[in-house]
Length: 255
Image 1 (cartoon, rainbow, N blue to C red):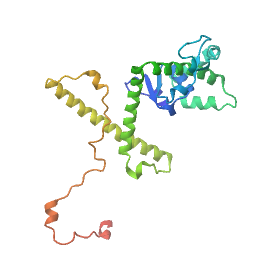
Image 2 (image 1 turned 45 degrees about the horizontal axis):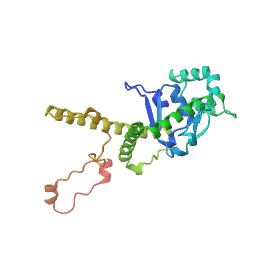
Image 3 (image 1 turned 45 degrees about the vertical axis):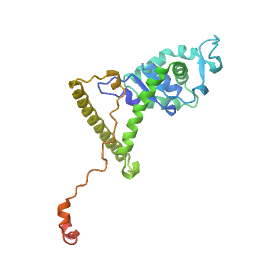
Image 4 (image 1 turned 30 degrees about the vertical axis):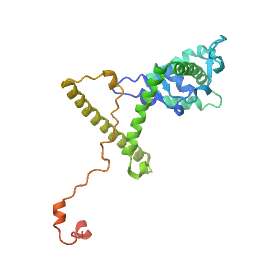
């Protein structure tokens, strides 16, 4: 959430997807307050707790409704919730800092409880949409797959030291991570430019491409990248060489 709020690019981020480990009801509530869509891929949907907002009995989904939603927490603290959302939106405080402060109280803070209740509502709606709509599931799963493709690209490029960060200082660790991001972004830009050139050539030759198909294209391909570099050998020179190659003199090189 910090990265989304700190986004300074021209791209407007409206939806965020993650896997099961990346969601909580508190996060659901915060995304809703900020006008963003949170669409996690939650496993074992049948075991999730869904909440009702009234005492109405629903014939088809009654078995999976686990408990009531306490709307009074939301309504009674709505003004404080809006002030918190405004502080996050305007950058007065980071989301990670605010959550850590609210959770540091010995007793659960009323704002945390209120935002969690809002999150329960949004989570219930998300799960019901996922169970009822295949296009809805396909949309956020496709986005999650694109994120996984970026992870695979980073893992492919991060081959030295078996991908581990061995720097001891935090600044050095951040620098190493930033270098990986730079290389990954360079690959994405390269793939995007050349893929667009191929598409333009195909269209110029009379080919027809459905624009909806391009939504499924990912520029995170790396099969064509030799991460180890290239080694060049002068075959003719080596075949005509007599005896061993000249030995290196370390003393002369240091001098």
